[in-house]
Structure formats: C-alpha cells, structure tokens
Image 1 (tube, rainbow, N blue to C red):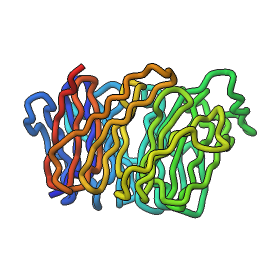
Image 2 (image 1 turned 60 degrees about the vertical axis):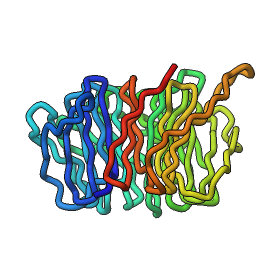
Image 3 (image 1 turned 30 degrees about the vertical axis):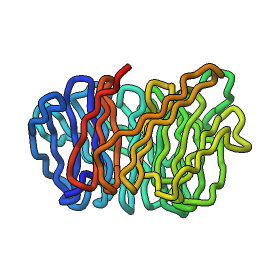
Image 4 (image 1 turned 45 degrees about the vertical axis):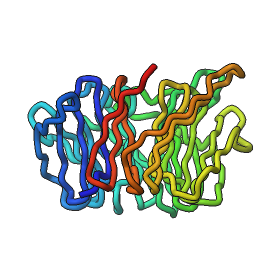
Length: 304
C-alpha cells in the first residue's frame, strides 16, 4: 500500500505510515522493521521525530495527535482538541511544545508535558494543509502578547509559524505574540511549505507552481518555478542551498538556490517512482528518503 508519510533521524531510525493505517518504526540503515504501532482510529497523515530522535508524534484523520516512544513503542501522550483531521505538525525547539494544523482551519500550540492546548495561533475558515517553523532575529518586530504568555511555553520567542491553506493563502504568525506578520494569496491550493534558510521559504502548489518568499520583502515572491502542471506534494529544504520537491507524477527534483551569483546550478533528479506520486521526502543528514504510492521507501545517497 502507498506510503503517505515518513521521517528519519541521524540515529538510523525511521517512521512511516502506509494507506492501511499501518504505523511502522524501522532501522533506516538496514531496512529492518522494528515495531508495528497501533493506536490511531483513522488514517495517519503526518509523522515527525522530536530532536532527541527517540520520540515522535503522529496526527491524522481521528483528529488526535499521539506522542510515541521509539524505544518502547508506548504512546504516553494523546492530544485532543481539533474538530477535523490533523494535516501537519511542527516541533518547537526541543519539543516541550508542538504546533499542529488541521482541516478545521486552526493552528494549535500544545504543551506536551501536560497534554493541553496553550492556544490557537491561527483561526481561519479553510483547511490548513501544511506548516513549518523558522527563527528570526531581533531585526524583526514580532510584537508582544496582549496577555502574559503561559509559563508552559518553552522556546517560542522569535519563532514564526508559516502555513499554507487550501484556498491558496500563505501566512505567517509569531508563536509568542500570536501576531500575524505575513499574508499572501496564491491562485492554487498550497500543499507543502519549507524554510530554506532563515527568513526565506518555499511553497508548492496544486497547480504545479513553486514560489520562493522572503519575510523581509513579502509583497511578492522572490522567485517562481513553473516547470510542470503536476501538483507539488512534498518539499524538503536541503542544507540551506536548495530544496527537493516531490510531485504527483513521480518526479523528485532538487532545485538549487543561493543568494550568490556564482552558485553551482546543478539539478538532480531522484529516479525510481514510475508515475507514482512522491508523498513525502526526508533526510537524515547523509541520505534522502522518499515515500511513494507504489509502497516503496527509497533511500538515495547524494554524491558531493
């Protein structure tokens, strides 16, 4: 069955979900299955490792987020509060807090330790498909919260949540103050989003377009790529120098990006999927992994 999402750690652990709602923990070096994990009632749409590499979080159609131990396979924490499917998840700092976005139009900030919601960062009437986090310096005025922040908020200062919606909206909101700092309408649903470096981020759309934005100058995109009509399904920032994007037609291409004029513009295409969509891309620092509809997880080694 198709692999809908995956994540990997530098510690040679991988987690993935397939269309039959099977949640697998595996050895990314040997390709050996470690555990089958059960607990979600519906399909799982997203899985993410915490920075520790031994804990991960999943979210999906049952409107719940579950935090798992990779060592024991136990699920000690379940977060409830969304009224529709969870579409994407971000880990804040070391993981005391996490952010989730959902089809209910909400982006929620959670306290993992107390299994509670600390507040809604975004409240819109349309599905939020994707999100990512970036940290900004003091030159960006992100504002102060109207009410004192909860002492359970750890590492939210200077952080911005970037998100993409089904109606084409791309937005940014400050985690601590909840102030909206960025809002831009695109003509097609935003399926995926990733920070390239600092204040620059890339979004992939249903109509096949890719846009590069800067929070410093957000009146219009810095760059746009329109090389295919095939929908963008996944995007992965790679070493701050470029990004991989996976499409519905099975293509997975590396796009170089650099502020310097003498950058090496080398395009790389990851082969293997034969017109089967590439749903997710992950990197453990050495290898690139892709999740595909043809039920295969592919592992690529990039030459220098």
